Image 1: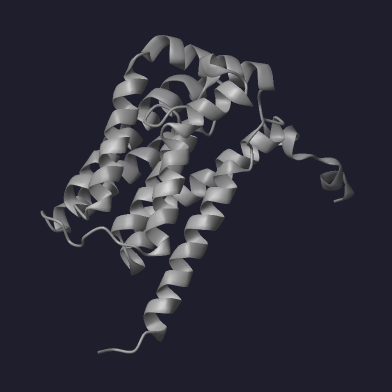
Image 2: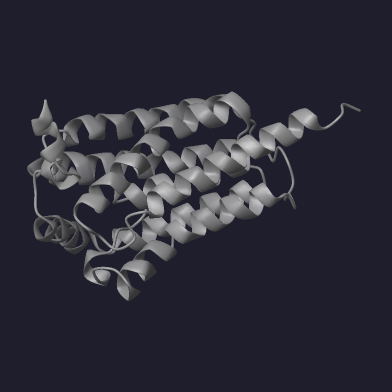
Length: 227
């Protein structure tokens, strides 16, 4: 029993930091300039979310989860981590869930641009992930060649999705659509902490900010008197 106390987080990661960074670099080399298209679609989803177009936004988010699951987890990460295929199926399940939610969402704007604090927080989190993640990697991270990008890599995909979902969903539907992104952010942060990566706490911080904002919004709505 005392033997477990000698284990550290990095002991559960079956690869070295150098191998992981090289994996990111290989993905970027193989799929450039798909990064530009993926980020453009993500920004379009964010702009439409600010206008309340639920159906289109949910449909636009789904391909990023599909491509990230197939390209990152099944094609590359599976070389390093035995659990990668399971993660990949989770990403495909998230894509299917987003499309299912899109079928039941309204086809037109459900609400106009809101001045609520949650709108600013959701948009900021999404922007940190969409154009921000490559910039962070280029300035304080491993470098632009190893930068993670929305739609190809899981961390920015999950973070941007949480920011956008905060703009368009409320209550149980928000938590249902956010469950897999939240779980991945936790896994992603733990992995980055284990390899001592710069910005390892960004996914965890995104979860705390988005979840805290959603809870606060729900409490505020419940406390507001019905008219």
